[in-house]
Image 1 (cartoon, rainbow, N blue to C red):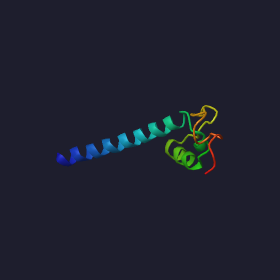
Image 2: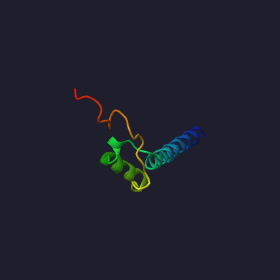
Image 3: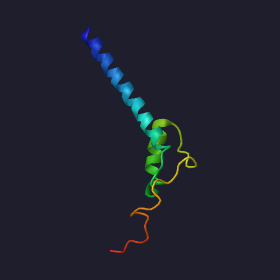
Image 4: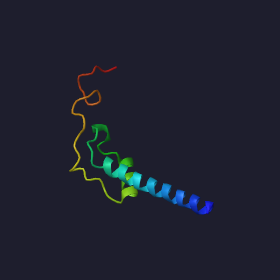
Length: 77
């Protein structure tokens, strides 16, 4: 009986981890993205292998229009 309970717990945990990973990457593929990560090939590969869906860049928008990363007003150090 205890073995069955432990097996059920392990299967439930694995299912929750897989569903959570899918949800995370599908969410990340659709939300606004920072300019420096716009074409992150490593994220694209990982997201595609986890979800089986390529990122649709026409549905994504840049997240921060002006910040320290994209600013040309900062002095060169």
